[in-house]
Length: 333
Ligand code: 3HC
Image (cartoon, rainbow, N blue to C red; front, side, top):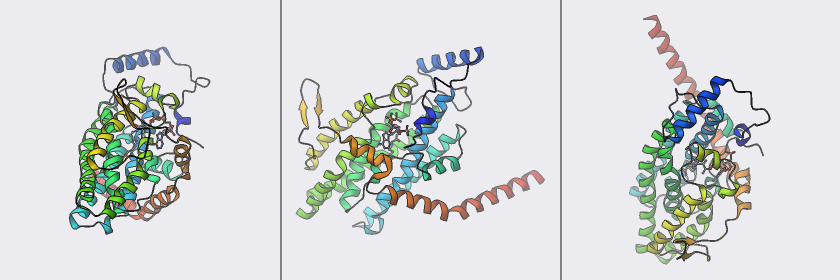
C-alpha cells in the first residue's frame, strides 16, 4: 500500500549533495528548533520538514472532514431539538477545523486540489476511527466522549508544534474540541442516569464498539512508529503516541466509573508502581486492516467524499470565476 511516508522517508541514497549555504541554513534551523523557537511559512526549512508537515496537516484536515460523516448520520434522528442543535454545531465546527488545517497546509506550498486528490485516490490517510459505523444515538455521545476526548489529548500538544501556522490553528481547534467532548459525555450521563435499561444497554454497547478503535487513534506503538523520532526531533510531535495513549486511558477509566459503564478490557487495572492504569493489547492487525482501507465503512466514507467533491464542482467554479472577475475589475480600475 502506498503511504505518504514514502514521500517523506529520509532518502539517504538519493539525498542531493548539500551546498555549504544549505548546510549553514539547516544548522540555523536546527538551532532554532533546539531553542524551542517556531518556524513561520516565510522561513527557510528543510524539504523533509516541509513534506512531513504537509503529510501530517493534510491528513489531519482529511480526518476532520471525513469525521463529519459518522455523526451526520444522526442529525435527522436526534432525540430532541436541543440535541439536534448541539450535534449540528459540532459537525459545523469539524468542517471549520478542516478549513483551518487545509489553510495551514497551503502555507507550505501545497494546493487544496492536490491534498484532496491525494485523499480521493487513497494515497493520503485520515484517522482510522472514522471508518466505524454509528449504529445508535449512543454512538454520538460515545464519539464525543471517547473520540473527541482522544483527539484533545493528541491535539493539545500540537498547540506548541514548531510550525507556527499549525500551532495557531490548533489553539482554536482545541477550544472547540473541549465543547465536543463535554456535550458527548453530558448526553451519555443523561442516558445512564435518567434513561431506561434499554438506553443504558445502548450506551454500554457503543462503549464496547468504540473503546479499542479510540486507543488506535494515537497511532502505532512508539517502537513501530516510522515518523515519531524525527517528528519529535523537529518539535512537531511533542509527546509520543504511547505516552498520549496512556494519558487518555488514565483519564477515561475514571470518567467511565462516574458514567457507570464498563470498559471492554479485563486487563485494565491500576499499577501502583507505574502510577498508571495497565491495559490490554491492541489488535494491530485490525488497526492496519482499517488503515489499509478494509474497515467497516472505508468505501462508504470515500464514496461520500468523492460524491461531495464532484457535486460541489460548480460551486468552486462559480466562486473562482467571481474572484477572477473581481480581480480583472480591480486591475481595470
Ligand atoms: N489512522 C490512520 N492512519 C494512522 C493512524 C490512525 N489512527 N495513526 C497513524 N497512522 C499512520 C500515519 O499517518 C503514518 O502513515 P503515513 O506515513 O502514510 O502518514 C503511519 O500510520 C505511521 O504512524 P506514525 O505514528 O509513525 O505517524 P505520525 O508520527 O504521523 O503519528 C498521528 C500519527 C499521531 C495521528 C499524527 O499524525 C498526529 O498527531 N496527527 C495530527 C492529529 C490527527 O490527525 N488526529 C487524527 C484525528 S483528528 C480528529 O479526531 C478530529 C476530531 O474532531 C474528532
